[in-house]
Image (cartoon, rainbow, N blue to C red; front, side, top):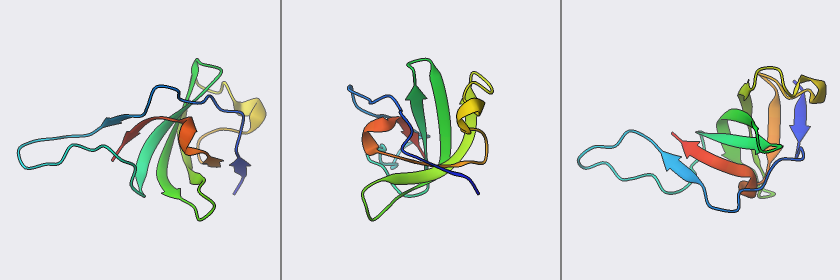
Length: 97
């Protein structure tokens, strides 16, 4: 498996947008939990969807790339579906269960 460690990703300066399905008696998600899915950004217009994210002992995060939009825009950097990616909390723009 290819691991792409700490690529030059955009930093989120405004806070993470948390989302999920909510209803009566369901807590609103407002923090990261292992197993969540996140969206990262690069060059302000490329989005990288990452699944099964876990926090590492060194305070980095690791998960599998599910999708890159626009399609194939980062293949020359080996960031594509199925690649493991390691990143920082500050790189997360959205988070969902």
